[in-house]
Image (cartoon, rainbow, N blue to C red; front, side):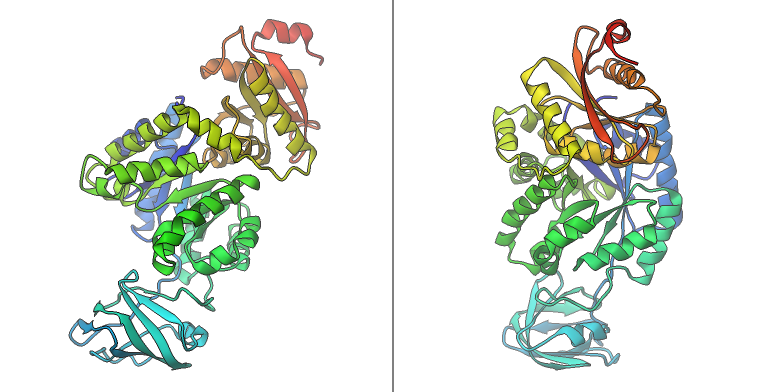
Length: 481
């Protein structure tokens, strides 16, 4: 089953997409990666969805990536005696550790770590930033504040602290349990929430023990400030624009999105753009024009994937949302301007033989009559390097390692194809030619570029590039053993 686009679609599963028929419909409509949101649903529900995805994978003969999104620590106020209070601009309000129900002048904030990090002038945001307060003075168990933007504060509303690095681990106890469950179940990617520093990523990597790739969600100003270090520690990135737009001025989010996408591409790390992409389709069968433009912008910027959250998990039109995203992607990629923008933004940190090989593969594919670039990979690194080049021809990833093929299914332009382990280069060329023909990328009259590494079946050895015919008779006649 061949997609007619390069950018990938991530669909979140939930109440609207839990059974075989609905998940299959999402896949047929265009979903390439399925997200299990660990903030909602039981382990049993996630296990059932995981099993359905693997069943579809076997039926369609195509690797499908599964992304488990960890919740991260949730910072919330306590409860109120009257279940809430009205705060006016200029009011004085106190947060403390006293578990007594709150009133009009105070409430419990059961997170001593926040008080340890606060200082006068720090800002506290409540209920997705709808209420804003500035700290006047504070201590180890309190913060006296002035309300700068009022509103209704009520039981257990979320709290954001945008301008300090909190002494909190990105993984709560719940996250650690969910991480182990997800890895044992066999997910391909772990999305890590509340990342503030590269050490948060390393902690998750130690716990995952290589069983899943680590994708860092950029949703805090501290993560933006430390992005270069976080990127190097991560296997992939998600631009999580929801919390990012709460903790930063909303006008700061679009340039940050563009900057993060470009850096990810430079370092060959897949990047997902997420949050509110087709939000109105939760309740409407048609998106707004602004939402369509938002999806298109992420694709023009070179994102590897665009993501649906509540639209596919809890909305009334999950399949229509995927179809819309698929149609927008196809339309954008047909636009000559798209190719101009993508090629103008090509900037690679080329330092290795593999970097040179993949750059040459793209150059050859674009200057001669090449149908596809076929790459053998153990770890997926070569595939990421080829995708960074954003070639004009399809990328076929061949590997004997099922987990590798699933992980690279998140990457721009990649079509993952299982193959056996190799012993001779001629065998590699023949397998690549068959894959190109079988999946409709080429016929016997065309040529492909094949990259591989010798010795075979060893990570990090990409050192061969071959232009080969798709006609196997010509391969056997001309290729060396």
